[in-house]
Amino acid sequence: MPTIESFIHLCFLVGLPIMGIVAVVMAIQTFTLGTQAHQEACKDKVKASTNPDTSTHEAYYLGFFHPYPNAGGGGERVLWTMIKAIQDKYPFIVCVIYSGDSLSRDSLLRNVQAKFGLTIRADTIYIVELSGRWWVDYKFPRLTLLMQSLGSVALASQAIHRFCPDVFVETVGFAFTYPLVRLLSARIPIVAYTHYPAISSDMQTMVSSREAGFNNEAIAKSAWMSALKSVYYKAFALVYSFAGSFASTIMTNSTWTQNHIVKLFGNPKMTKVVYPPCDTQALADFALAPRQPLIVSLAQFRPEKNHKLQIEAFAHLLHIRPDFVMPRTESPMDSECLLEKCRDSLAYPVLVMIGGARNIEDEARAEELRQMAKRLGVDRQVLVIVNAPWSRILEWLQLAKVGMHTMRDEHFGINIVEMMAAGLLTIAHDSAGPKLDIIAPAIRSAQDVPTDKEVEEFNAGLDKGMGVLQMGFPVGFVATTAEEFAESMSIALSADEGLVGAVQRAARATASTKFSEDAFRDAFYKRFSPVIRWLDNQRSPNDDE
Image (cartoon, rainbow, N blue to C red):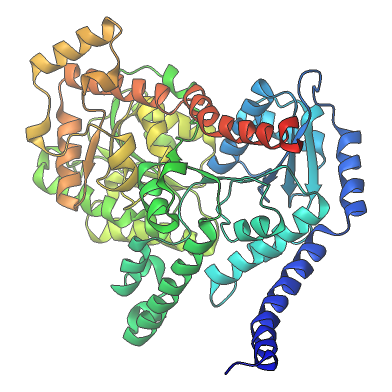
């Protein structure tokens, strides 16, 4: 029969671990937040440096966890377009940016204006400088995904210690920070914009199949090391899924990303696609004709971009279309000579591969592509250009007729949108973002090419103001194999002016509307407005009665 003493012992055994957990939670809260006086002092600093409009609404403070706000990539365009949208609709909100860049507020905003053409008011911007960005920058030799994710928690802890916001906005993809924020307070909504999952089932499949895209060479060659890494990825995916489940609302940049995030995090009702804003205005001013038989590729020289497939496809194109082969009597040209020739007339197709090189490894990949073209006998019609300035890239986009992008499972593909806006007949890999969101509908083979009657009907509808998406006219091509890419290039290069013009107009209209800044703002407001309403309800006087 149980005694009082045994009951006390049981309570002690059960209570001890609970007390331990509570103690750990309290220690984390105290370490991260500091004292109440500390947080009040931090808030006073922010108030002294900002001037939100509180005439009709109390001030709210949003913390943007984006350690790279001065970078000039697509992620930063999303960040600053988001902040611009908030300033325009919610003048009472102060945007606190947790930054690892050692720049003053004014310098940072000047750079934003120069890079993205966005004018951000300084009166509702505050910069919290972080000194521990190396946690997420350092390339750990082992367990990189895990170590950088844990590093993001340490960095977020520093950020919140220096200022605890009303809303935590995470725009890089550091999902491990969500449980930390929830641990600190259940009253801080977590808003996430996810460009791509840190891990996906596709990555796990590639590791298991020992493909080089997500394995270094040593691991790809070893069965047991690949198996071990596969176990590590599966374990990481479980922890990543747990962390992501704490987000209040999630925006993803594409259908492919959304599908993976919903599968990992759950919560499909709170996960919606918000396409990133693409700067297509200048590109959309390019004349659609005349165009030269140039096939342009825009992508960093990284393994996953799969540039080798482009050369294989181009070699196959010249094999099935001998009329496209440049005679030996003509001399191969460098980029300057080719550009000059294109301004006049170019008789034979040339593949121009333009990309950035981050390091010596990328430079070596670019050189490897040149050697591959030479081995396949197409080097006289292949040009590999490294780190070209944007002004020169624009010249190529103005002249080229065809664009090509061969990365499999590209989560979105801003370069594809840019090529479409510039008037190129764009061919992309039949997967992920390009397949599901960008080049849809698409031409996959000669059987899908619109007839003359369909071209006429499309042009008439467009002239009447009908929407491109309503008419379902193809906006480009998708392919998977070298043979399919070659067929698409052959169709695009040989198409009559009517078909070319119709696809160009459809692609440009799609790029300039579906992926515009206005479309992003409208979709963002739909996802963000409920967060503000929730905060209003939490702080309404009725809650205190």
